[in-house]
Amino acid sequence: MAFIHLPPISPLLSEGRIQIRPDAGTLPLVTPGQVLEARVLGRLDGEHLLIHIQNRSMVARAAIPLQAGETLQLRVEGLKPLLTLALLDTSAGESVRTGEALRVMRSDPQALAKSLTALLEALPLEHAASRPVREDAGRVLQLLRSLVFSQNTAVNPLWVRDSLHSLGLLVESKLRKALQQGSTKALQDRTVSLKELLLRLIDVLRREGGGESGKGFTQKLSLFEGALKNIENLQVLNVLFQEQEGKYLFQIPFLLSGRMATADIFVRVDRDRPGEKKGPGVFHVVFALRMDALGDVMVHAKWKGKKIDCRIECESEDIRHFIALSLTGLAERLGVLGFQAGEMTCAVKKDLGRAREDLYRKELSLTAVDLFA
Image (cartoon, rainbow, N blue to C red; front, side, top):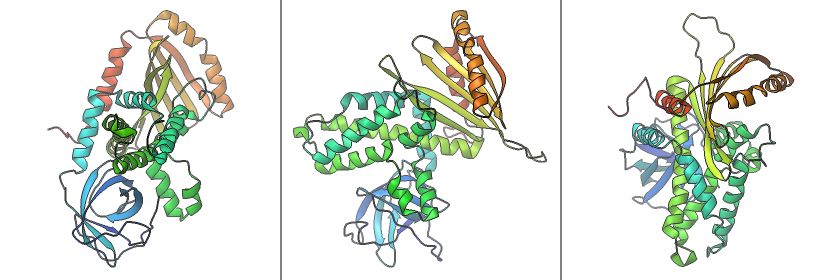
């Protein structure tokens, strides 16, 4: 991928315009009036964003509010001194993209798990006509296997953190830090995420056509596009949640008895109230998942400074007893890591499936704005 760092530009950028610094290796020859399709990968700072045009990623400057996942139609307006593009489709705004992500999450919280399952079943593309397609599909499959929580990945104590990077939820954040530091080595050495591999694979498939003599091309392309869209939906929601309510939603792929699911992790950060003395941040974490043997399980944790309180809820007394036997070991492991174990309990709570649905309704509601009014 090619990356361009834009220096500060003194004139104010017009609304509905995007600027890219010309570079011989950036884009094929473009002419004024030509229409290009671009995908927004994410914002880097107030005005700069990372966009994907014609199989290349580059830094651009824009004054308009754009979110990761938006697809834009851009018309070439000028070539010098900067490549200037005019936004043609202004209807695909921030609220529309966010509203779409919310609708998907509310209607099908397991959309990400389903799309990753479909990818695992469709790969590898051994009969694809193009070698680049076969190679990229193989990389996607290898990354998927390392991404999913299973017996092989359970031994990694930092697996949750690594999976967020591998999925691609933090790709724009990592790129922004590298660009701000001016570190080309960091850009070259970083691990490519699933999101980036999907972007590349989709671009190659669109350019080369069906491969496999056209058999199943549309279905496979739809699978890759669907997985990419679900990753970007999660990114869009987290931007909105963080800005408006100081919370996050992470979905971690989980493989249980050959069945793909996601562990849903809701994180809320208590904001300092006006006039209060600033102290250590307080994090409230809810971890919800359904396991074949244990059924629905919810973990409520509170983390303040070095102290962690934890309450686990399950659906039967037998399961409560089984989990309670491990609480002492959990407290000891937290101590080894330098934390103080506070209250550690496990209780029976009936109908945790409904409680999980209620949790989604609560966390996916926004008090600051109603996008569907």
